Length: 275
Image (cartoon, one colour):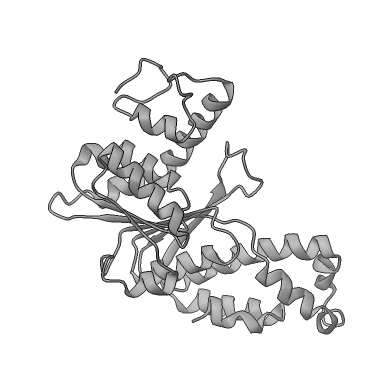
């Protein structure tokens, strides 16, 4: 089914846009859904160049894995706009909530998106699961809460992903360690003032978490770009991290990562960012 609404790209599934509440049930755009559609395309514009890069070899199959997929909003949009016409490539949605996996499977079946697969797996299970390729091309994680973004990074590193696309969400782990060690830190450096007050602890913890994530990716040979996901008004978490594996020198960022953990008294988290 097609539509003559000018904002909608040619060939896009109207049924999918209705399911995602981007189009109303009668196939129209209102002010709210027009904003949602703009946001969808804005995010896709960051991912499309990466997809074009991985499909340059016409003989090679390719894969995208969406971690913490939820309702697989992102995966469905990418499949509809890119994979559907290409006739090759697979998208895997990884989600721990079985009911969401089932709903995504049902929608993919209705839309005849046969090369979309949904797996009810934890991160540890997904790394070793025979249902996933040994190596994947792109790993995405959109607003994966708390340590789920870190889990997606771990998966990407294990699977030697060429590209990693992250929109981090709230993360309380670093803030909790800062809070626990605050007494030890107060006399060490005036920089402790940055996180002395609880609200600053939370915000600084979130900020430093993403700095540590970028250094972790760089310590594995990735080139990292950080920008704003402008237009994503549904969340205050507006940071977009894109990493491309280029086998860059690893030792310097690893040393910087370890030094930063030591300086902020975050040694308890070496297991997450250094292993």
